[in-house]
Figure 1 (spheres, helix red, strand yellow):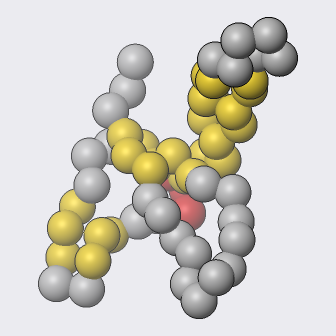
Figure 2 (figure 1 turned 180 degrees about the vertical axis):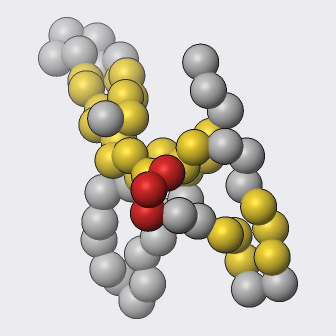
Length: 58
């Protein structure tokens, strides 16, 4: 397992797929420093019977 984080990225009602970012977040005066190379889209699967959710970074 690797440490990482997920960022909420929508501005002004924009919708997009959440991304998982590798490594701990780096805080700067303007927010969090991110890199396109270290991002992976998150896919979430739901059990049709019980509603259980599992998420995976692809």
